[in-house]
Each structure stands twice: as structure tokens, then as C-alpha cells.
Image 1: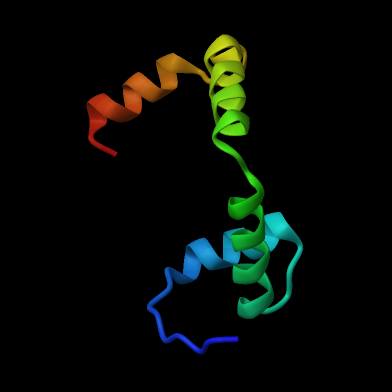
Image 2: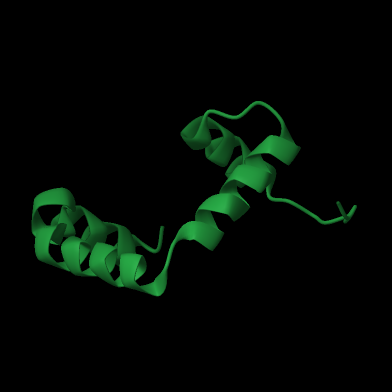
Length: 72
């Protein structure tokens, strides 16, 4: 196994740990890599198609537009 020094976004790492249920940086990164490697282009295309179809049920576009207008 290779050792690599990288800069990580601490808040994104914490969020990933929460989502993945992992405890360490190493476990989190390895789990995320395994998920990314196991996700095919077809899986991503199906997920994107589903999101497009259901976006109106999930996202509040008025809130998003307000956020965009306010520059947040």
C-alpha cells in the first residue's frame, strides 16, 4: 500500500465520515475510493436520470433561486 501526503478539506472529510459511518481518515478515504471504483458510468447515468425525473419532489427551486439571487 502506498503512502501519499495530500491536503484534505476537513469539513468534507467529517461529512464523508458521517455519511459512511467511518471513524478514521484512512477508513473514510478507502471506503470512498471503493465506492467510486465500484460505481459504473451506467449507475451514474441511471442516478442522474432519476434525479432529473424527481428533482421537483426533492428540491425547493424557489429557495435555490433566492439563494442564487442573494449571492450566498
